[in-house]
Image 1 (cartoon, rainbow, N blue to C red):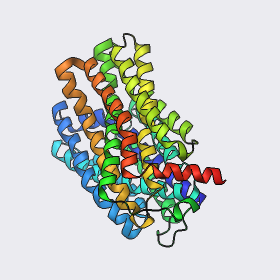
Image 2: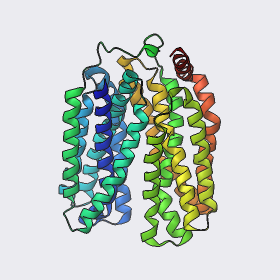
Image 3: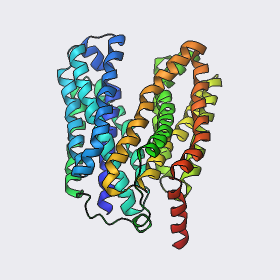
Length: 394
């Protein structure tokens, strides 16, 4: 069973390596294709356009063919990155490549979360949160590594080729360690309490995930802009915003990974409060130091939200429908990731960037209010009760 956890961590590491490399390579890809910022913004929409349908379809593929679907998706993502780096020479080529990146990324996202959910159910260990921490850590490492390669004048495809090698390695590991889901021996506390999960409960929990991701990506996408425009930090210091945010997210996820599932609701409430508080601190900050404190607090809060929600659902899902449940939850949540930066942009245009950060704080407050209501209404709060009972029995 331990191999299932190792496989999940390897998949999340490769996924993080890809997106860290991608984030650090966007300026060079823009220069390579000779497009302006407006065309780049249009091209980036194709990532979401490819990801959403792939996320919906992958769940059913996992339920039908097993979790080794994740291996193929992961390898395809690594190859898609190399393809974009080698072939994107104009806006049309970049859009086509990013559609492919979005599709393979969306498929990988769903399949690897399903693999982590299965590992957590089998091992009765907090795999999901730590796997997401692994993702965040590798985003930081790979973005810094790509930056060094870029500074050294290496071609843009070189870091993507390195990521492809990591993806293939992780894919081979998954093919070796994962088995089809039929006949899985489930952990004792889930064997007699599994439920058939309907669409509406997953949609409601997905709404919580969307609020969480909207808050997270709002800070990731606009943090550097805030430091530069509101505090006059300059382009060099403004890069501290995404780096600090991603670093705190990674540390928080590893730190919180040992907390027992029985405390899931408390974690969600504390994370929501921290996310809201961090956004307020950022909104009123007048120095670089206070802004980074606000970003760090917001990062610590948002870091725990989606992994905890995924764990709450995963502990109650039938193995035969794990892919479908993961797919629906991840897809609805991903909408928040896409819309978060847009949400900030609209508010910024109306009330300024500081006012927009207050609007981001409102997302955290909405989560704080809605979380216990949604968990109670959908019945997912039962997993916490069952976990407490299991802990008492031990």
